[in-house]
Image (cartoon, rainbow, N blue to C red; front, side, top):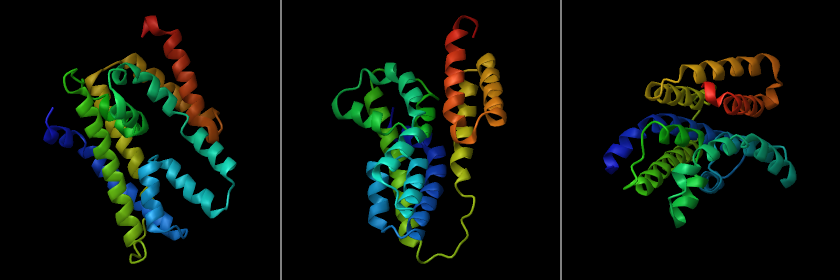
Length: 221
């Protein structure tokens, strides 16, 4: 797959990561974090909502143990993504495999699931998509953190860009694989989680319930 085609596939992530990265950079500046620290967070942490949470925990002078537990629980959903990508990543080697695992965000996962990866250029495609997506996030972070002190624009609500982006990518996956039973089950569990489960643990509990149901009903799905 050519670089241009890979770039075109990543444009939806570009449209979401740039504004959200800007929002993160602005938030970091607001809480007194220097731009280069925000930049390094986007390189070595690269975890979207976890970076927002890190900024808030830093501002409250939380301990390293508290930060570790909070980030671990927030990112626990990536275990599910990782399990579903084992067959895709097992043929990758060396740095490519390590970087693909490190850079597997929600949106990268959804993007990789929207098309078939050919065996010939799988490594190049996975690494390029992951690198492009992280580059968008880093660019947004730099724009927000460097321009934050000069801008008085109200960015309230911009964090919804990530949710909107994931919805678009989910629709793309459904259009490729119209598994109506799976979609219906997921929606029902999602609504159940919103109505009945504690907000702080809704996502991880819903994922656990959904995973259990899909395994138990595998023969009927």
